[in-house]
Length: 348
Image (cartoon, rainbow, N blue to C red; front, side, top):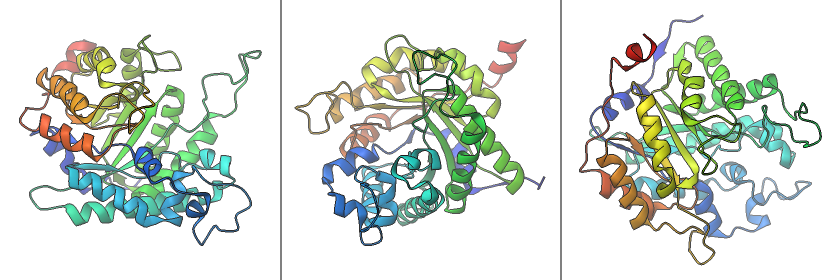
């Protein structure tokens, strides 16, 4: 094992101790606004590819990189401190749906470089902008059977997930990510495979980046899809020693409050992130959701005023307008502070 070298992403810890950090908003929402055609998704390189690729947003990092660069820059101009790479579905497992599993590494590398260039363009010594290498959940679940008639059936195993995540992590770090973000976790076993791969990469490379872990509560039961409460989820992943843990997606800010309150209570020694979607489905809305920038920013202002959060941003349906409004709403407020002795009291 190589000696561990800490990267510039470690600056994020110092920033979090001083103020609330702003994460960007939805990549997919911004891409959908462009109404790209099949031919535009393909670009010149993939014009003769054997199957349809429209909807493969991660491919755009290769076929239309300026589209992704422009979205990153729009969020940075709106005030984002932390920008996610366009890699939510850039694992070999997810890309197999498009017969593009062999392109996963290249997608992650290109996406990280695009985010890196955008952040470098907007960074100043007083206000660095950081790249969050995004690891999505994959479309498969290691904990739940895909067959209602066979509870023991599985369509993916831990080793397949681990290998896919390791390939992704390696490329994200090579491309210039400052932070790794394991997000939209609906199955804790999938997340554990990602965390195992991350730790394996850290040991082999000798480089350690800060880690953010974000689960998703799928409905009013207060549980993630694989059955855990927010408290159980935290205790399942805390061994990874994340810089921050939080919730994203699935619910708008209005419905997310009790679960963020629970997480802030049980994870007293860790920073808390929250990036909700833009509310409930609303076909009349420009974003498809019912929480406008004013509504989302007001609710996140309330979370900050209660001392619940350290990182805020947006998920599905949110736009640069949401991020700009969120930044204005929370920047006068102090971030949630850690309880340094909390872990020892909880486990005594």
